[in-house]
Image 1 (spheres, rainbow, N blue to C red):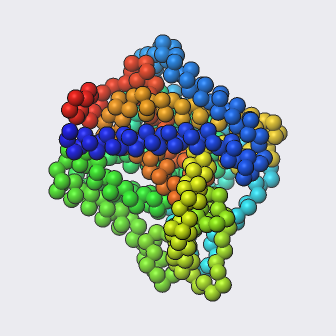
Image 2 (cartoon, helix red, strand yellow):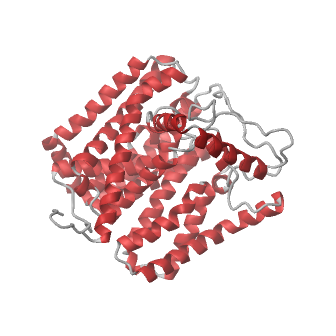
Image 3 (cartoon, one colour):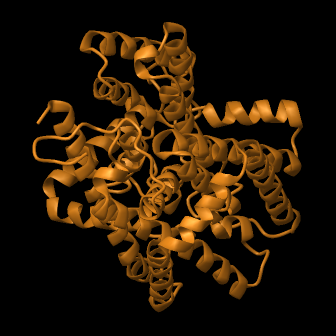
Length: 474
């Protein structure tokens, strides 16, 4: 077995572990929510689980009907499909969010408030604020501007989802993936979560740009542009800092020579840091400390790992005598690590809780857009629809990871599409969890779910598959 083949198989197995954990999180979420929140009868949660998983199984079993639908999609001229997809997506999102924003309501209560306790702060990187300032300059400061921005952002993400699906699994799968994200309830209703929508779209863009040209054909100019976009992504969310390592691995998996892979990764990393540098310099001037991006790692680690934690966010104010965020952040990290080391069994319990909080529901933020705007029964019905569709997707993906692992994750691009899901899953095994945190992974879940449907209906194309090991079929 070649080293590339061995590494790919390990990643496939890790994806299976993540998929099983996500499904178990969804199964355990109703009881978890009832135990800690107690506002919804867990029986309602399990009705949604039954219906959601049932929908997924029906889609998997209805091969002939799904094949006819995919055949019809493929027969559409590409230009007509794209026009219907992109115009329909923009109009649908714009209309829904405009209606929601136009209904007056009370603001939902902010139970935590701000985490900024010091005048000199680097708690939050500036990426989203910079983009929103640009949007306000171009479109003005209004609810209409926000709706236009979000509708455009999601439409761009839908196009990227279509392109990635088609590049990895063939045109039919790409078209299903594009429609899937355009109609996915959480991406329809979460118009006030620009942060997560932006992050998910940037992840899509980074994967698309990397594979738009074959990795062997990346010019230095292309790598410079890629590094700058990656740097901006880090300014939105510091978790993207580890992407150069992933890029190096992808280069090796794409049969790029070690020296060339190292040199190209170094170029990307250098320009990523160049894009970050103005913010880092600002932090040093303002805070008199070297802070590359932010000071919030200690917060998200400690609030999720302490004697009173349930895995979610909780308020922790600075101690008397703490003078700045850097000092507070270091103290949070020390105390979190000390608690985890001293209480390994409690930590493992919180790991399970965090899987449930992160992946158990897709409806936790529906109320942010609909709070006080619709009757309670209607709000619960909308939450149910959102949750059922999400659970159906999880069921389809889990089946595909277990039954068609080699086909669905049989190429470097397919493994890369799975990587953000695994990364977000792994990150929130140790850090503060919330249902909002899985939102950037939704487009990748949709692409892989469409690939499973394509496999079941005979529409999955072979694209750059990982070579088989001894006594294995491709």
